[in-house]
Amino acid sequence: MSCSLVYRVGLSRTVIKSYRNLLRLSDHSSLFSTSTNSSNVDKKDQSKPDIKVTFIKANGQKIVGYGKTNENLLDVVINNHLDIDGFGACEGTLACSTCHLILKKDDFDKLKNKPTDEELDMLDLAFGLTETSRLGCQVYLTKEMDGLEVVVPETINDARTT
Ligand code: FES
Image (cartoon, rainbow, N blue to C red; front, side, top):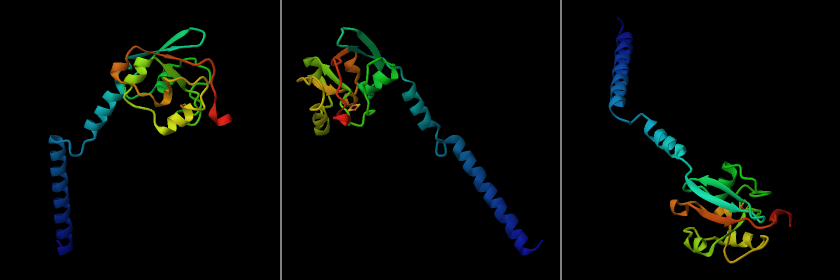
């Protein structure tokens, strides 16, 4: 056997041995596994939307949707296929004010995320603005908000067209 062949065979054995060691290691640890992360994501994605939100339309009709923690009220409308005309036209990019909702004073005060300047600017363009108005795409659900009722204003004003 030539010197270079011995070197190549030796090197190959070394590589194979290292590879086997790596495989053995991966059997006993999660160093090479992404399953831990993906299973966490799966669990999160599979959690049940169990926060109930009632939307009261101007004609008095109540429509109910369910959402999960960290989803916003626009997500609830979309994910539950709720029929609210023109709602969420800009898809939550803070550009339209069509997701304007009116909350009860108590619920408004309890909201953890307060309106940003950008939201307040957009709210100024909303139809029928009140002291307890918020943009649905900016109100994020928490477990404590289960049972929330919000009023959908009589009409919408799409700020992009004014
Ligand atoms: S969806 Fe347009 S501002 Fe909320």
